[in-house]
Image 1 (tube, helix red, strand yellow):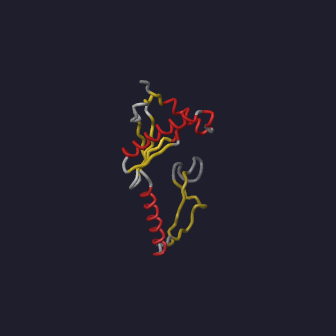
Image 2 (spheres, rainbow, N blue to C red):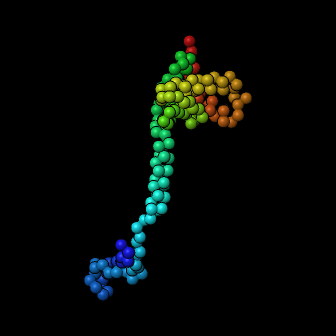
Image 3 (cartoon, rainbow, N blue to C red):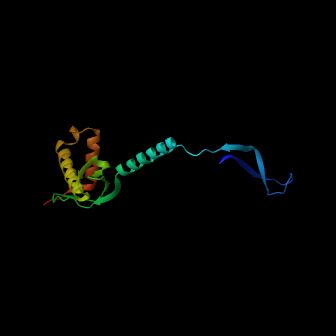
Length: 155
């Protein structure tokens, strides 16, 4: 495969030598390309890179969204469903609500979601108990976001 010619071409414009629309070689593209077969060392490097990429792909979680429609606590209700991110790793599932900066994990998505619901209620109660005057900016922002979607049930 050594010594093959790589030729460039362009369409001949009207009024020039040759037929309009005909392909003509471009002299600055004419070059000899020396193609060599890959060496065993190069193939081994490529194989190692492919293996590393496959491992990285295998380690990435399967991620999807779910919704929480109820908190599983009779003292609170949701005004609207909460969007939850689920990341399924080989041996662990993580459920999170980035807006609240809360997460929980478990052996399945159901276990992770139950844990997340508990975290939501506990965090809401703790932040409410402390009150806005004792919260920092991020905790106050979290409490305000929770109050927009959660409400205590009376009775």
